Amino acid sequence: MVVRLFKLLPLLLLLINNAPQAEVIRLASSNYYPHYGEQLAEQGAAIEIIRQAFALQGVQLEIDFLPFARALYESQQGNYSGLVAAWYSEQRTAHFYYSQPLYANQIVLFKRKTDTIRYQNFQDLARQQQRLGVVQGYMQPMGLIESGIKTIQVATDEQALAMLALQRVDLVPADLLNGLYLLEHKMPQHQQQLEWLTPALEQRPMYLVLSKKDPANEQRIERFNLGLQQLKASGQYQQIIDSLLPQY
Image (cartoon, rainbow, N blue to C red; front, side):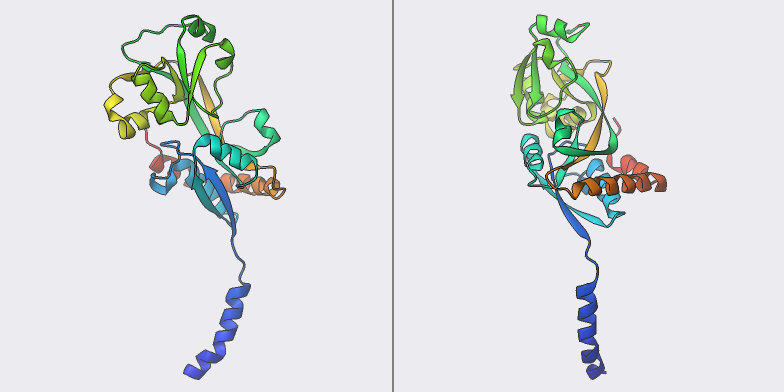
């Protein structure tokens, strides 16, 4: 019996060595709670959607977490295959292939509860000398920056909301779920100080983006889109949303 196993061992090793290997790609990501983040279950709904859609196409993911501006830059330079999620901008299409939408963020303006802020347009906010806390690298609602409103850039959403609570800025444009998650889980000391203005500024879809520095990414984005369609058709897409994305 032992002799027979030894005879089979070279054949087994040959089969293992010749077995098709899953393609592995590395993506850069920031922490954008509760949508995606290093400390979240399955690293969040957005990453799990990307992971499972790619898995249906025989592709495995490796994720490195970086501040958003650096993750965007490193992906644009081709040091990563792409970026986990980004909003659409015409400028970025020169550097990235965009996937079909993952799902949309609801962008609102956060403010202090003690402040009364009324405006008809963004120019009103500029005339009121409101100060805007923005995360470096984020796309802002069309016309907001162009209004001339004073902006103060920070590295993370958490820093922007902390500055709002400490009266160093007056407004913060942010995804509603992201703001509520951070206030509940990361900075509960400020949770009762802040609220948001209605209606929402916009519904802004998130996309997987892959760098045009790698020619293979054009075909990868097509494979991802196919995997995403399969994920939705199977019902698994909605299961991921329901189980990993909190409903406030």
